[in-house]
Image (cartoon, rainbow, N blue to C red; front, side, top):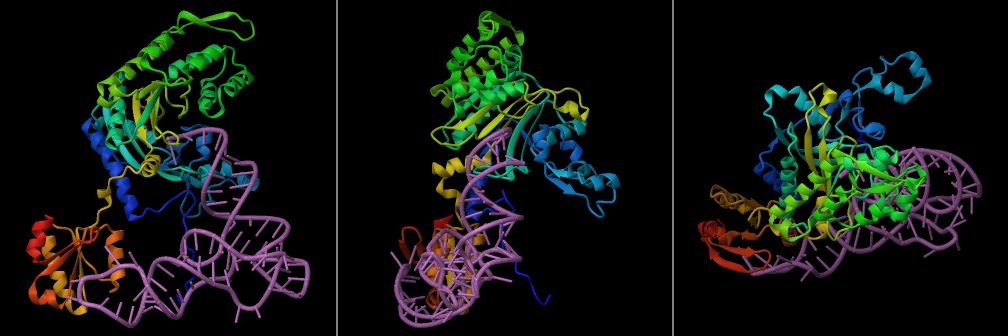
Length: 473
RNA sequence: GUGGCUUUAGCUCAGUUGGUUAGAGUAGCGGUUUGUGGUACCGCUGGUCGUGGGUUCGAGCCCCAUAAGCCACCCCA
């Protein structure tokens, strides 16, 4: 190693380093969420970052498959590729021969695998939470990364609506603890499904178009529905549900599905009346969840939970209630989302277990809290006191004093860096250390110190170590 | 997958119509001063100007290619 090649330090795209102060803030969010999860009986699990590729592929649609990070097989990974396919040079076809593993794309599919695989060892309904990084080979942009954390709680094996209500309570409590003002938007996949079917297009297409409403506006949405051959006149309905809608209006909404009201066919102007028990039940469920928000103190005072017909995004596996949380007064996408899914465990040969879950988008929650200045001062606190030896001859003595504080369970540090005062105070500032004590010959002789508050610059003279311990404990 | 922007010191950025040896601030290192202090002063290190070609007597600057990063679409948290 005579010559070391210098490499410019840089990160892979869409990934980030975190400074100590940032980690402290992130942990503050994680800890808050974990506390609430546990309070509601959810237990933490872990699964590997790496999954078999066959576990992951096909679960997120065609788009999703493209965004999977695949891990190259070890060894001579080309040897299993048939020669004719190598010759063609189609990398997509070759993938299955050269990569058997991938990085997880979310925490839900690993959960489905986990539940089926360990069903004998789990207590059902299985309530778990899981916090960890996931990876997507997406093009990064603001608030979107290739490596990011998800923070999920799910209930598997119970289809009671109380689960939805409990999860809503978790949303409300977490955001209250974080002092974040939010709005929960709620919708039901069955409602979208009926409206899509009656209009003669697929739910996915219907959902994708509706979801853009707040971005592109009503006219554009109606145009797009026209373009794909959607049959029902939606003008009134959409106009009515553009703004946040409250529980009473959800009851009205029911009238679209119980034969009371109807839609007009665009082409024939014929009246189309829908009778759908599924959609009626969906409306009732949504109304129940919205009403239940009043069980929550904040929820009863503010209009926290709103029906929103245009909330339609999300992965295709949702089948029941879907929801999304947005922060009030901040320009930012959703900061949490979730819903009920019915068929997830089937893919892994499990019996059909219903699941419902929520997910916190902690990267965005972080950004919002930073923007609104909601992080408490105390979370990035370093040790309580920094002892600074004036020169090398008193280092050992200084260390002994520090160790006394530590024995008394007071976090303390000895400063062994640059002797410049500027550096020492920078150190306390960066690490948010409340007190500084300088140690020189005088202190060694007298055993008395001067305790200096690094923020207020107040000093307390002639104080002994045991007095410092008393003061700081 | 589509489009736009950016790339010069560890970081933030100057750099004139193409013209000597590429600058500043900041951080880092060293020193001066100060026994009760933090904002002072002096000095030093650090760059293959993203990379590879081309035009030119001469390129950080012009042209082509390429890479990386960011931003916006699609989609998503």
